[in-house]
Length: 212
Image (tube, rainbow, N blue to C red; front, top):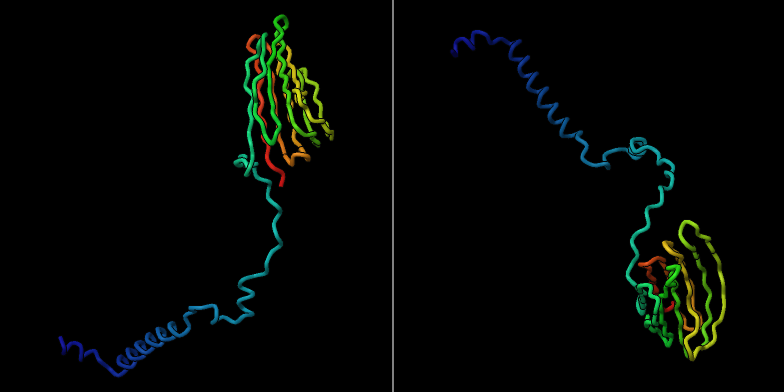
């Protein structure tokens, strides 16, 4: 075997083999030497061209859907009204806050089956209100009322008017208020729904919280 190898060796073969070995080792050294491991190895001007110019800001995206209502704030109170319509109604206490006491009754007309919510209040002090409201009467035949008003109610030693809403037979009426009782420093949101008919009812939700 060794004789066969020596028989094929010549000066030209040796030189060519050595040249190939040196070329391969030189390429490996060059690859290690010129391998880019950090942007610090790139000229800032070249790096700027590679990154390109910053484009203009895109258009504002669409507004997302409103999230769920958060929990009531500190000092907030929630009242509710849930009464069946009755031909012999009596007043039921709704709740009280800072001296204001509310009562409600849900009356039904025995003949027409119309239902009516009546709410009253008593307060040791006059109250000053500034509010907006929306009222819809009797469902599809509704007349919608939208308004803003500011008024003052005197102190009531006896129950005085707070809310009245009526719905005819097989109809629904609703009203919503939002505003501020500046004398008691209260921000409020209230909604009422009255349904007429043999199974008529009166419902309401009241949320009051101290003004900041």
